[in-house]
Image 1: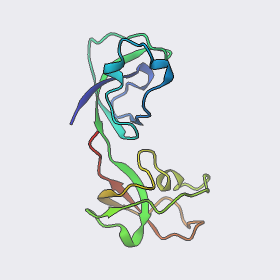
Image 2 (image 1 turned 135 degrees about the vertical axis):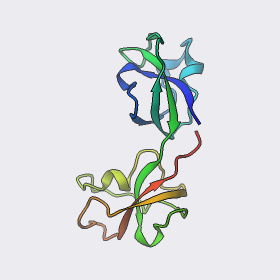
Image 3 (image 1 turned 60 degrees about the horizontal axis):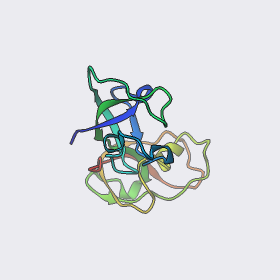
Length: 149
């Protein structure tokens, strides 16, 4: 489902993904609030189109202003326990990981998915980018189904 929203002009690139973080205190009193604050907080989105001939609007949050784009909820790549890695299955993330230097850290603690949530696996992608998990977890890289925003 495509939604039209406003995002910072520096972020307005087709294919760019972001996790909507919700309202900033700087949004108070803005005349464009209803066009900007129309996404679901914590959901990962992908820009699918840039509205042509749309003007750049002033914004207290984005220094170069905002412009209209089309977005859709995006799938979230994540590492899950291998024994749970089946397409169509509902799983939770394995748990927090303090090893930020690990090449898999972004998949073990992915933007757009919370540890408390169960998510549906859309597809199994295969081996994670790390060679050995420092927490001794047997992990598989999957893609969680995009959530409706």
